[in-house]
Amino acid sequence: MNKKGKKSRRVRLEDIAEKVGVSLSTVSRALTGEKGVRADIRQRILEAAKDANYPMPAPVPGKKIVIAASSAAMIDYIRNQFTLHVLEGARDRAHALGLDIITRPIADASDERSVLDEADGDPDVTGLLFLTVDDERMLAATRSFDKPVVLINGDDPHMRLSSVTPCNRSAAQLATDMLLDLGHRRILFLMRPGRRTIERRQEGFWDALRHRGIAPTPDMTVAVDDWLPELASQAIAERIANNGLDFTAILTAGDSLAAGAMMAVQQAGYSVPEDVSVMGMDDLPQASFLNPPLTTVHIPMREIGMTAVDLLRDLCSGAPALPRRLELACHVVNRQSVTGPNLRKARILT
View (spheres, rainbow, N blue to C red):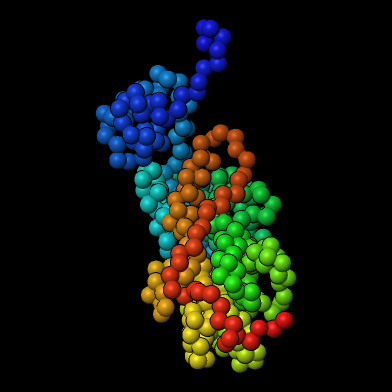
């Protein structure tokens, strides 16, 4: 309260920026200790914040972040580059904050234990990021770790660990809604089962169908054992050989599967998108070079890595904080692989 008994307005970053005569982003970087701010300007910002009783962020203990990457993440790093873009985002953000990133592979519980012991014994390690980890035994051991842990591209079903993921469920629903709006009713969902993140995408597909009064049936999901395009091509080719063209669109849980699906449709003598629309998810760089260029859902891969570093830094401040699950928004990138259905060619089952 001020002298007149009125409640004082909380000081905002904008107030400090106006007082010092700099941009809001400069104030934010100065207060969080990021690079790129001149020493004299940083000092003026800190003094202005202190004079205004602005709550200063606590310094982060340590100068290292360990990223423990699962076998699935490392395989993806080599094949499809989703992991590559997430790691680039994390490294760029850590560099801006003056932190070093150390990557450690984990294939099983013994690898995880070694990573945890190494991080626990190194006072310079501020916390851990676990990339693409679903194994419940690994999550159980990580929950009892003394330093902050954030999951990337995965989540803790018990909500004892914080996590950062794309909005997988709503992203798939958004993609399916687009196909439904174009008139498609017989849509296949092509996926590689096994991870909760991909299950969320399947649930989003089902959500969209049910919202339009379409009951999902088992034959609308096509599963493959890996993310390889050739496996997707084989699965769709077998579907066409056995059932004919009993669908007008394919939504895939990843761009690599979409590439294989397009190949199978074209090799069967049909055209994309005139006979079959194909949509992917991820928006990897190669999506725009397919023939035709792939309509897909953009997953903010770099932003996922950057946000995970920011969340870990917040958790390291020492302030009490409940675990939280952050989901980043996704959007459709419309290219040339999707159009309205060709009902004359399709053999629609009712």
